[in-house]
Image (cartoon, rainbow, N blue to C red; front, side, top):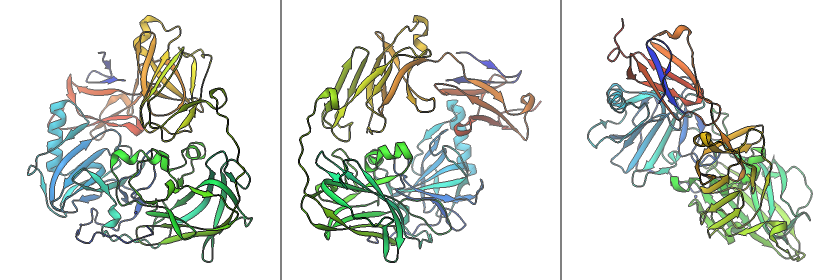
Length: 548
């Protein structure tokens, strides 16, 4: 372990739910977690990159340091501090069977701060995950528990607030409780996507998905283009939409969505609650390919075989409809928010009898058949891939190719299917190394090559000439080495304390910061790590450090 000197006194050690039904919970009367009107920048079930948002984001007027209060009596059951995720976080368990979570805090109340600091110095760690015993840290309803902040992976000052069922730690929609949040705005519908789902399916005589722009009409949403739509075969729908709340411009998620064809509910979901283990299925709930390419979030009204989300309340044939006769079909899509504001798209389409065709499958043309409900193994002379059962969302025809290595790589470039096809969980990947020096084996790792010269390190270990790791996405992979140490730069001049604080910028070009420690006069000191800003800083603690 090597130490990089910063001055005579400082050094750092771094290694690298059917239609809208108001189901407000009436028997719980929570206190507000803040002492000002609640405006939201994010709501429950809002779709993030790879998960559903599990709480609400309460605006703190653009500043840090607002009082945060316990919404009900109980006891602090968990204190977690991390450089990413929710940052400084408090969990309070309540007698009513709920646990509330307060994230991105800047600090805790004095009693909690004292305990946290004791734990941190005892473990010589800034990041902690502590579970106090019941009775150790009791709280009263309306008691100050901390100050709002911007810690963790927050993109601006706010309070991330959650309500969970204590048993199982299941997130529940906080808007089902009465926090006096004004919302008179209905969801906004932007576009409709129509997907042909097999070889005999067509949308306006086309074999690929088509998008139709929407606009607000006198009695709901209508198509911007008034041309007729003709469908044949198995078809799925998807819709791009957002919800908004009063006094906020932030895009939020909707609460319930229904697809009705000829007065029959084909698909319906409502997002009252979900478990964390299923949140990752959001990659199948949306059009993952469109999200990856254009950043647009299209929520599908049909589901893949391996989509196990519990939010679906009504499904007919997985939301897939077979347009197999020449007839007119009446279709409705209804989106609602938790406060009962509703938007509707109603239209007619024209069915066509599909022209039956045979799809001749062979692995050279279409790829290798992989069943979502089976383990799948692919091996070539330079690559081994093992995909566990139920890692894929649906059956696919797997494609693989490779291209010659580049000067900074120690393997060929392996094109594993494509990055626009979602994968639910990790699968193993082994790549054969090429011209990797013996003395650099410990520095080698697998990297995913992304557009615009970006990379994503997934680590790895060299075993019998292959480097082995795990990943949860398809795409282009290769082997690189990391021989460049992290950099440490003082943010202030001459490494002197200013207003009782010293800060350093810590960065790494390839594999990222693995660990960090700060020392003052050869004793471990509590340096806090702000990951999103690559900042490591120390605030003078008179109980720990004596001024000379």
